[in-house]
Structures are given as C-alpha cells and as structure tokens.
Length: 206
Image 1 (cartoon, one colour):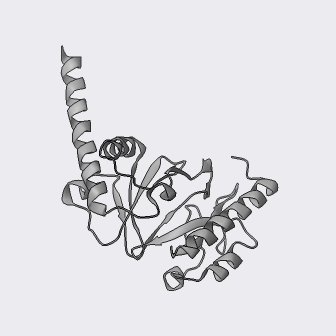
Image 2 (cartoon, rainbow, N blue to C red):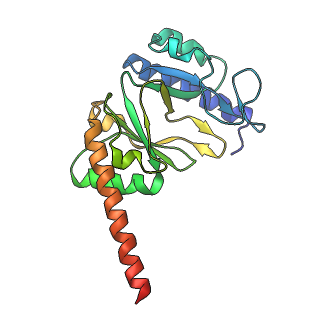
C-alpha cells in the first residue's frame, strides 16, 4: 500500500478519533509503530516487525486519560494498540479458523467483536481472566492476549492494508462476551475442520 503523506495525514486523523473514543470508554489505548517503506517507524530507529508500542514503558501508561491520548496522535499516524489483560482479552487465530468460529457464534446467536488484520489474523475480543483451554493452547497459531500483551485495532495501518472490523463492538453494545463462549466456538470449529478433512481424505481415496 502506498503510504503517501496525504494518506498518512488522513489516517492520523481517523486513528486519533478512534483512539479518543476507545479511551473514553475506558479501553487502555496505546500508540504503536506505523509502516513506512523501510519498516516500522515511531520508536528510535526503524523496526523490522510491528506494530509494537512506541513507548518502552507502555505497561506503565495503561489507563492514560483521553486528553493525553489525544496528544499522542497529534503529529504521527501511530497504530492504534490496546493493552489486554485489564479491560479485555483477545484470542488470535488464522483467518480460516476465524471464519469457522464466526459461523458457530452466529448460529448460536452470540455477537462477539472481531477484528482482522491484512496479514490474515483474526482477533476475537472477550472479557478478561480465563486461560486458554488445553485443546486450543496445543494448536499452532492460536494465541491468547491477556496480561502484559496488546493487540492492534482498526483502523491501524499495515504494510499491505489496514486492520478492519469483521464485527464491530457497537453491535454487542460494547458488552464483551465471556472467553468461554468464544473458546467453545473455536473448539467446535476445530472439530468441524477435522471432520471435513477426514471426509475429503475418504473421498480422495475412493
């Protein structure tokens, strides 16, 4: 994606508005590094991976008030990060498992905020405190973001696109679901994937 100065300016304004809005709701907002042609900028020097918090002491800045949050986005198009483990947790999965889990949640009539990144990762936002059950923790690519972690939220820019909402938190009235509900859906999605793969294997062998 061509991050020209005009694009950066437009995104900075949108990112600032989103950051302030989340901060007013009590979400622990943090500025993150942003993409350039050379890598991820915002910290001293250019980082190879991102987005990561701009401030090394980011954990001490959790809970910063909205007026201070507004100043963070006054000059640069920082990514919009939210610290996990206090107000919310997030379960990160690949896009295929995410789609399957979203279908399970929709069938159950449960609305869960879901964000997606251009790198093919889906983030299911939940309430805090529940560990990842063993059958999920054993799966490569499933990550629980809890205490001492953070996630990017829309409209954070990436090298090849922008993070976006698959399901906006407004649709559930900003009431985050329990982690157990999301983990139930992920477990069902994993099992259905196993069944589908087995069925395809049987068909191929005939």
